[in-house]
Image (tube, rainbow, N blue to C red):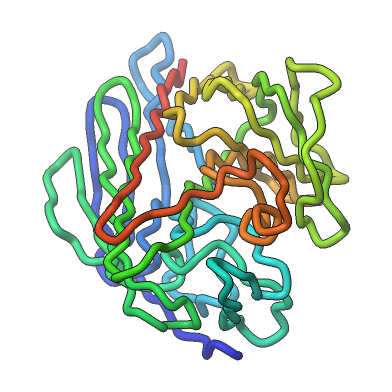
Length: 306
């Protein structure tokens, strides 16, 4: 089942501002954060702008070929579903994919326009209603993002509700492209993956304390059992403290070869969790939502530009 590409365009982004921090949001282009920045003060009082995320500068793109920057929502699943096929409650499901895409990837939220439900100078609430059967996903659901900027940093909250009359497999996450040079974190488990970046099994982490540098060669690592805390650092002395709710028990660390970003993606489940859980693999993080049941999680980024 093939999904047609569509053009996403940024008409009028929403600007949030609080103290030294600012963010640009594009509801109509996948509910994305286009940029997150802070003004750095020098001794003379003048400032330079520090970009926490690799900013998106494009004004439009095909949703099948999105720019690698900013931050976008992952919902109602994160990462890959092998072969875009899975079984749930004894039924087989085939999901639609774009041409040339072997696996379903990153849910549906980043490929569509989100509605603006509320907006102020410091916060915006966006929502996306998925129709039953759209792109092969047989469940209707409603997703909400609330993005809030204050003088300490940036908070991203997600809520997902099953609107169908039968249980739905579920998960979500956020996919930020940080411009950081290094990230440090602690995690109890690692999930080795194949050459298509699909997780295979869970193993104890060789070392709980992990350092992840941005490298020219690139890598992807799936972790779980982390404490929801990570520290990102830049060569100019700026640093960021990430704090994720327990709902985000899994984390993807991704560094693409030769690119200028380091992704730390707090997510609720591992890559291909649907198929792994069906095969009896434990602790995949996959959630089961009853009709009208919801799940939610919050991610906070404390920004220290100086």
